[in-house]
Image (cartoon, rainbow, N blue to C red; front, side, top):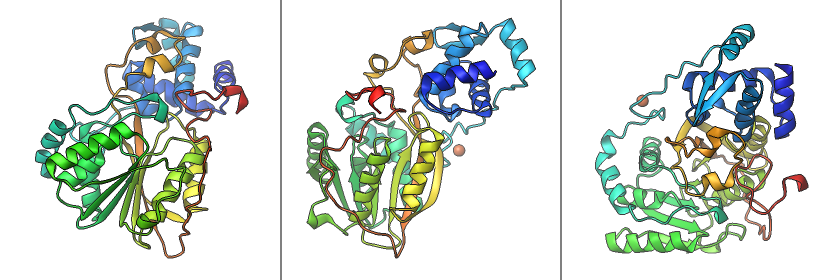
Length: 357
Ligand SMILES: [Fe+2]
């Protein structure tokens, strides 16, 4: 076991502990498939991949496409290590979100029709969009919190097209989208015009400050930042700058796939420290991402499961809700030229050499 841990740490530059590795292995055991195990490993993608490789290198598992099968030697070793499978009990109705779509089934149907010919995700902006069920669950979650009824909603980055689902629900008073990708801005504008949704769009890189006329103007913001501390500070800072004041809420997602526990702690320190907000809600695996076209071209391919396109949506994020308090500060400084997309846990390497970090 020590050797196995050493290999994982060395190859991933992380500080994974024995119990963390055991949880990954218990997920493999429960799911029997590399991709299916990922929502439960609670570790960066590369750590899970390296764990599978380390098991394979020692003859403890065999691969069959993306399946992970423990060998006789592997089964004996599991006994010695006292590793038992996770018992996965995620609710089949809501996918574990704890949100029923019963009151929103009409919205889901209409939303699916409207976004059928949506723009595909591109690597340049670290895109990847969620399932329609996830997007509509976001509307339902907002409505359960009272953060959308008659409220002004600011969406920072909208490749999930939440603006369309939100406006279609008829619940918000105003919906404004700030988005870097012109294809998405155009798509939202076209749908909004055709369906008379009244969505306002601003084509802007969030490294630039929010325009004066939308500062302190919203009750709620929603964003899905790239997973670096820099991006989180920037996106959530901008979101808070857009809010009217105390009691207003912000929503965003964070994954384990691209962030280890040290980064999670850094995120939490940032949110409750410098940014001065309070975390009110966290829902595990709330956001389910549709497998994106460029996935297999951009990840490692040194073990068989990583050469097989996943048959289920494996990339998930935990949904956070925060509220601002009376003493929450407002930041809106420019961050021009800052690298915000890539760090050591990123799935995709876009130009920054791993060694340089
Ligand atoms: Fe449920």
